[in-house]
Image (cartoon, rainbow, N blue to C red; front, side, top):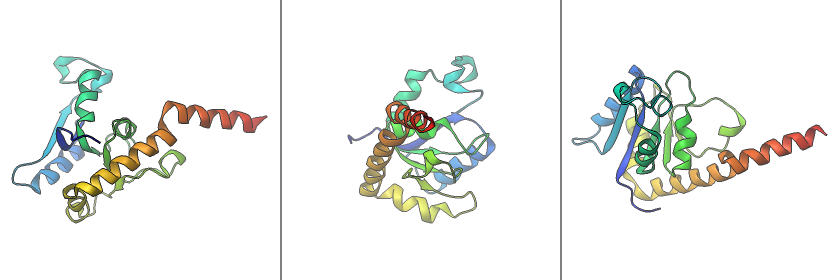
Length: 163
């Protein structure tokens, strides 16, 4: 993995929980190494500058320049950002996710909202070799589980099992 422009960050729709999470992460540092961008509406899907959203190209550019993607839950525990972050080769730090097959082997760092994530998250953030290990493992998970080819194979296996 090449050096990326930003240690980590979040781009997504604003919710109070997401803002609180970002403020907590910022509080760990005198000068935050993270980039946080919140917008109203559904961002890349809406693509209206007057609503503060990014177009798909800009969103992809910024996300692919994070070493770590914080995948805070929004309206539900799941977010497209998980797969987008994996596709971009980011290490992922996420809320606890539902127990479904496609998340079973996701090598992300999962933290419950009530946990003291300074003691859990900060050591990973500060250790470049751990971040790199997570990035590589997440990329492998994407290729094997969430990429279009992997999903196509899963569908084909399911169809074959119905014969």
